[in-house]
Image (spheres, rainbow, N blue to C red):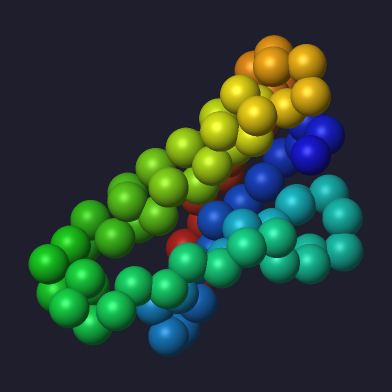
Length: 80
């Protein structure tokens, strides 16, 4: 994934999506928490979703062909 600006959007059903801001807005991934997880996380679900996405981006860097960390990508949190 090339360096670009990304946004995390919370959907009305409580799911989170990751999208590029500067392109057609196609969803790159979706995170869904079960009711039990939402109850446990309470208002921290945004923080956990963001941490999960950042960990995924870092993992891609580690697993990349040359083993170099992925370029830093700025995540912009947008709640709808």
